[in-house]
Image (cartoon, rainbow over all chains, first blue to last red):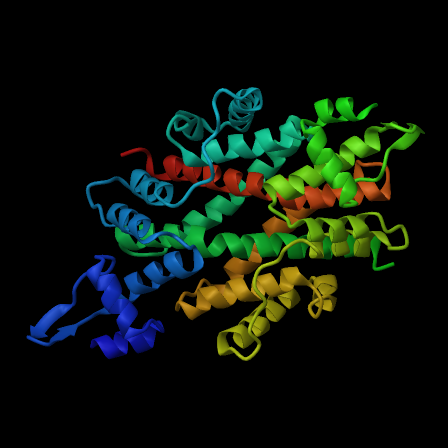
Length: 214
Length: 214
């Protein structure tokens, strides 16, 4: 397809597509003469992903380029490829390792991983942004004097593990390794808002079931 | 306890506590003489909640006041009291009802609620911000040309319903109606980052289980 059709099918303006091409976020089309290039389905797919990251995920352009570098890196095994792409996305603030609540949260999360029997997650603690995010979130909870007990945290973790199995089942329906990595990135950018909205809607349903509308 | 001790136990400076008192986010202490007021555990609890909303949730002061107004409204039944407090928190952008993708997403979410058998959530669609957030998130997904089929969305929703049951079981462990509503607000501000981090950690664990670290 030509640039105009790529624009029409993606809903992205030709000016924005040209900007993405200049920034290297989209591979050049196949040049069929001096002024015309031809684009295919892989361009359309990539364009949608770039747009989702920039417009919905508010990911900076330099970060998008880094994420795509991992998505396209055929030298990586699947776990590392998915991980590298996701880890390049913007993360929460880093934990302050000098803080007492952060140190206590490290111990609590390490114990949680033992309780759950998640050895792989435990092997990744020194490099995983998800682990650091969890430490920061648990420390914030504790710093305010709240307690919800280790069993509740483990129950939430087991349910989120079931969610993660659905995620990966869906990722696996895509044929190529690059598409699998693209889908994992989309999962973070687009599916997390869906999960959060489903969670709040489920709270409303459950509250009304338990307490009525009195 | 005196102001100094309230500050020490909450980790909030006396200047900030005085600001919250002036703004009406914290009830006045019990005046024991012209210059000294006494505070109790309810002040400490409220102070932690206000701090969580402002410092972690980045909720504007006027919105905090509105949320607390619902938390403290003894005239409301429990469902409406929890709902009003949560609905007053900042929400995502409102759906543009003239947009075709938004209209299609309304139909898709309405069908989902039928599939799930969530009549109460369905009864609330005209007023629920969670419903509108879900419509916006689903429309964003579709606008980019993605499809994941109604069955996957329903599977995610059923898991988030189990999460919501844990949430409400925890809310119910608190004695008074005001504390229940406070805990529900904290759940949104503090527990959603924990759930999100658990989700990403579970993805890492599950990916490594399935694909190893090659």
